[in-house]
Image 1: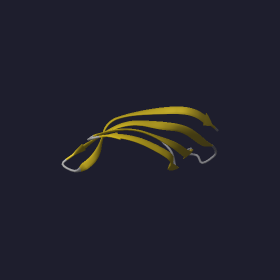
Image 2 (image 1 turned 45 degrees about the vertical axis):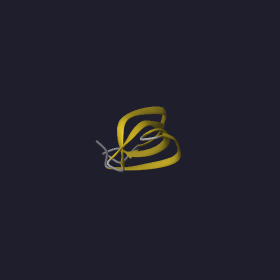
Image 3 (image 1 turned 90 degrees about the vertical axis):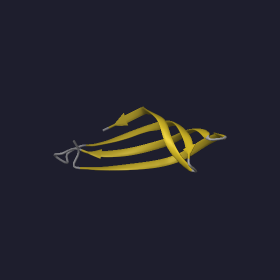
Image 4 (image 1 turned 120 degrees about the vertical axis):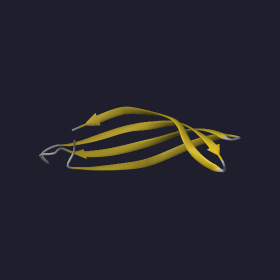
Length: 71
């Protein structure tokens, strides 16, 4: 869908309660069109619920929220 993209994770907060964690991470993405004439910048957040299983943290549920897109 795009000729190039960049995906950057920025501020991250996480509340851990035993083997469960609730996290929020801000994300900035750059998306260059296939014809390379336009570029979209998307700002948003990942809202994650993680669980620790066998000593490893894994994402159980992720909600992606787009806060703004500019072209």
